[in-house]
Length: 220
Length: 200
Image 1 (cartoon, rainbow over the protein chains, first blue to last red):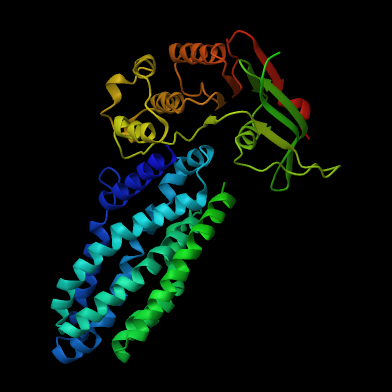
Image 2 (cartoon, rainbow over the protein chains, first blue to last red; image 1 turned 60 degrees about the vertical axis):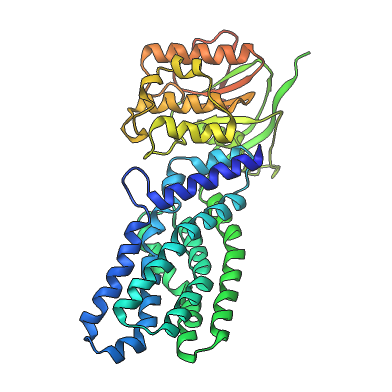
């Protein structure tokens, strides 16, 4: 019974985050935003292929980080507003489990489409195969951390006036380590950057269920 | 001897700098319905949330004792938050809870007048219809203990009578129910608790 309930919750979270809620949201918007940033970048710095190939990996990282801000306001707040978290708490499902499920669903809905969209973005910026591989591996290592920071920030700002803007503001500095390690792997060209991005991700993923659950309980 | 559904002792409630009530103890037997009344702003909803375990009891302002709440069996809550996905059709929103709790019986759906609303997105339902939908979710939960916070708000006269019958049937079947409402309720065997007596 408990396992079936958790599976139902995960399926609901996934459907909501992928497709949006009745015409609103969904994952298409952040992905299109990600591509748009990659597309307009050459307009801003000029079409020099050498320059684009050199900085393109970092541009993709920056675009990913900015795109990760877009889903924050509908990650937690609509369900808190509708009282779903309270109903789950009444059924004895702990907030930690709920937040962990939400984190898993957020990553599953965000990371694979983002890594897929990285291919056309990389082609537009004219990245070479080695850089593309490093960016994709970096995103694989770093997106769990991005998702974890996103869920934690969204739970903390849920219910606040102007919470969406505050969430974006909190999100960026907390993601700096991931950006340094993930994008840094490109410059140094080392596995150490990827390993550190992965390590930072693991720490964030481990902390988020507890931070998020505490925030949800404090916000009741 | 009747089995107890709820034992709560020495409940105090403080919201921010304001004390709402203190020294509230109450017990509830199986099959009993309790009407918590009192004017607006006295802490009826806070009491309900406290009894639901969503709000920890505050320590007593004088003795420093923190109250305790013990329920026998699972507990279902309906308050002003309906707990349904706004963007989903009602049928899909209830189907999610059916996967968590078990299905809502068809007679409850029909009795609540929801049968022809199942295709309508929850956000387009009226206040009263959302309330009925939340009641359907509550019934589907199949919990012996009900906490209803203002269950009659937004309901028409016929629906109010139906909710009263529903509560009476639930209690006749051995369930316990606490209703916070400023309206009078026509439920046989209803006991009353006036929160104003515990106000600070």
